Image 1 (cartoon, rainbow, N blue to C red):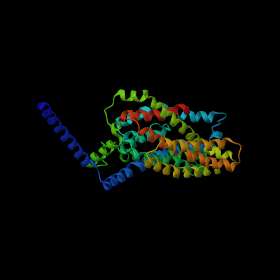
Image 2: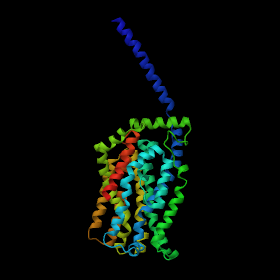
Image 3: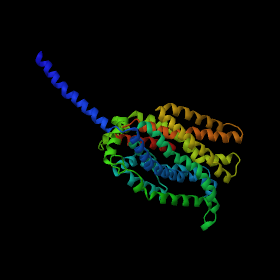
Length: 394
């Protein structure tokens, strides 16, 4: 009996020592609030603004067809019936083909190279997939659960700003009709494509790598920052080597498709507005030129509301209730648009719809990014969720 007690005491001592050493190590890796704030500010400065600019340009190029339609595209190309809608559908084919593989390639080839390649292809060929899920995936590797939605929302604000300024930009560019023998709608595509190309070229130097490989932090800062992320995200942040099993787990997990359905219910009304908002406003009795300009106002308000909702969502660590509230607003806006009401009431409904749907996109993306891991599984899930929405749009 005495021998057993001595053995237990002998085993307990190394265990207690190991726990004490782990506590000391955790304490050494824990940052002070001032250090945490300083590093977070540096990371925000180097990651969020340029990524937001790229997505603004991507979305601007994506929705300019709606503005070009009012500047004479359909008439010049002799489109009739549902041919315009078919053109929009063909646009999403590249999304379906490359969204998921792109996220896996991003993890393998590193973000600076792959994002630059995507944007150059987009600027020249108008075939883009992978930018949105790829940059959102990159954000999930840099930020804790409670910081993610605010950053994703600033990034996504690029889309709402594109909606706001896209209308004003198209309004100005369409007056170039006749320059070089081209109509105004052609110059919308040409000038916005050139702007995208110029801004994409510095991507290899301005897009950050994953935190464990980035030169943004010193080795000591990197160790502390990765520890902070591991405390927040646990095993979902594990940088395991690539295996087919991780991708298969993402594709066979039923939760992947529940999140895909959630994102679909948000993405469908969002892209419908993005592509048809100028036409909706023109149908209210405004001239085509006025519709280009007026389409800026709802998106300007949507940008402000998106940032406010994201901060509330992060502070409360709340995703699904936020989605229910905001998408209920979206439903109300669409119902009013379908009713026989005055043009003024319908214009107000456009604001309600934009205010409801715009904050829902980044909140849904954050919802997905917070709940899957390890790295390649999360990359595959985020690519699949966005890809699924593109399939349905086709």
